[in-house]
Amino acid sequence: MTMLTEPKKKEISISVNEKPRYQALDKKVVYDTKGLNLWYGQDHALKDINLSIYEKEVTAIIGPSGCGKSTYLKTLNRMVELVPIVRVSGDIQLREQSIFKKSFKVEELRTRVGMVFQKPNPFPKSIYDNIAYGPRIHGIRNKKILDEIVEQSLKGAYIWDEVKDRLNENAYGLSGGQQQRLCIARCLAIEPDVILMDEPTSALDPISTLKVEELVQQLKQDYSIVIVTHNMQQAARISDRTAFFLNGEVVEYDETDKIFSNPTDRRTEDYISGRFG
Image (tube, rainbow, N blue to C red):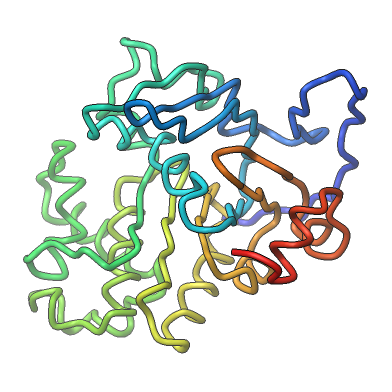
């Protein structure tokens, strides 16, 4: 899909008495988080999160360990609810539809929102079956259609040329970097709207990390991507916007260039400069 480059828009000005909503002019909002609070038992892990994530951008979430980055990411596809002591208030809307409504099935949400984890987690199956798994779950049985989905998904993850002659081999035979790109291809096979990435390169070597970063830059032409990373250089390289989390709160959220060159909050500057974290 070819995408025309849009000029960057100015942020909406906010009066000093308003809660910052961090919304941009003329940008389609994919995810809109409104007054989100989350508790693990008595631990208040996310505190009044108000954050808009925009279409066909890479949004990076940075902050020290334990600040709520991964918790927020897993709330976007409700994986956090797998923890029995979790309690949530507020709302998250995906394309203006609350993900917490009973009518919004978790299965539908996780079809529209793909997830890539910190460590590659291919299924103990062939490369082909890893990619075909999702489409089969959704009822596709036609071999020709599955073949096309597998090829296009692997091409979309820029790994087709490396594995096209090995499709029937076990995915565990791939290198770590190849496995991670295979997992991204597995996401693409179900045609998600959003791809969530939780530290996707932290277990990879520098060359594999570069390939995944290049892939992310290509994927944003067609997908909205939210990436949690401890690597601030990575956030600066690949993201359009960056949110700085600290102690369960969003301290600052803006265009990445501004966050790294001219942050408005001293805590952001201190973290980026390495004074803590």
